[in-house]
Length: 56
Image 1: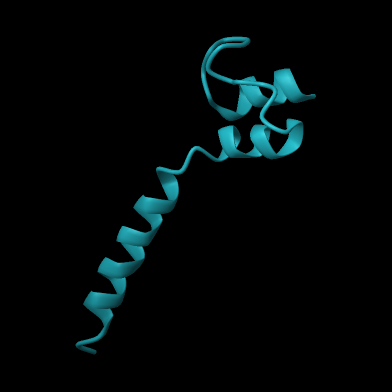
Image 2: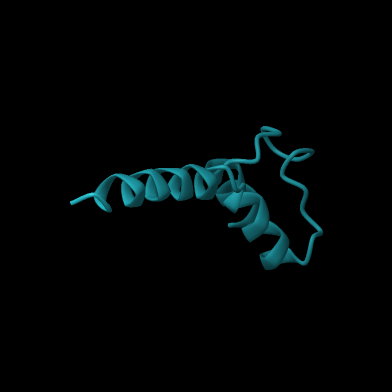
């Protein structure tokens, strides 16, 4: 029972850190070799919708 709280805190911290990674930006760099910059093309938002519109 005493290990539940540290595991919960660790899981929450890990989830928060994984959520801060700009996955659409990383995916666009891997898909197009760094040619498409999401922050300077389309809606200039490095999110998933802009990545989908620009990368197809």
